[in-house]
Amino acid sequence: MSAIPGFDRTYRLQALSEESLVAARGFKPEASDVALATLPKSGTTWMQQICHQLRCDGGDEEFTNIMTVVPSLEDRFYWEGGIPKDKTQVAPPRLFKTHFCGKYIPPFQRSILVVRDPADACVSSYHYVRGFLPDGTQFMPLEAFGEKYWLTFCNTPSYGEPELSGPLHHTVRWLERAKKEGEDQMKLLLLFYEDMKEDIEREVTKVAKFLSTDTLRLDTPERIALAVEKSSFQYMKENEDKFGAKPRPEFIKRAGFIGTDKGSSKVRDGKSKSGKDELSQEFLAKIDQQWNEVMLPATGCATYQEFRQKYRQD
Image (tube, rainbow, N blue to C red; front, side):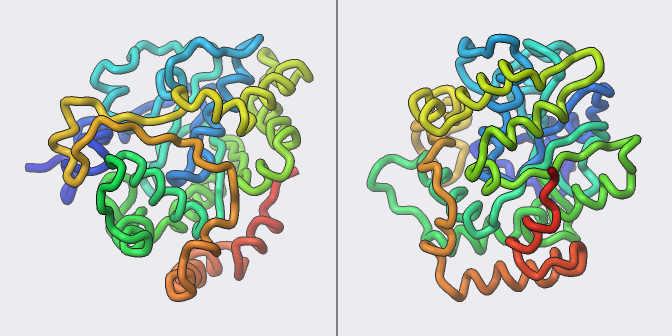
């Protein structure tokens, strides 16, 4: 019997397994651990790099891939030996990327939630998945991908719950969790991808202050300046091998439509507003419908821009 009913064994290039998801759901964070919570293609890798550079005095360019130093909590490679399972990481605090939402959010006492315009995130996800395919390979159209995978993200048995629907539930559930737990139990820093594009130094400074404690100050001018430099689009694009993804060979043949070991970059073009340019008005209306059903009742905000203005943290 499946440990997770409905789990798709070919899902996400075999990056997930039922065993890894069960292990991740049972994970007990230490008090100083920090979750980096995002929807896919919403600034995940960017935030991993920012936080990692802040915690490494003098920076770190020695890692081969960001996932080896800031692991994905639910990734099977973390639980199956691809990444050391001991309690330490290269520097404190320990950082864990996660796409979990709903009742499966682990009990982290500190979390950074990065949110992006849902239309832009949908388009970026499509290009990321398509990047694994051999050149010239036929792939489903953008909006077919959006219908099948993006608009149902939180409904998947991997990350969410059957009663949830689209990706917007991810943001709502994290906000609800923080409100329910209270700041004594769960401190949450909410950031917006577009604000990071607008003024990266300002947003890195917020992160540095959030990560700092009485005994560990990460908000020094030197650390902030170095993190800004090493998380720039230019730096990450020039070193994109450190920030890409490549399926492990033993899983390639089992990964459905994917029949290559070609990797896909997580640093694409550094632009925003691609959703409005590449999606039809009909598909954008479906995102708006989900917004009205999920985000409007929860936040009182009628649009993403209104939400960004109301919830931006100084």
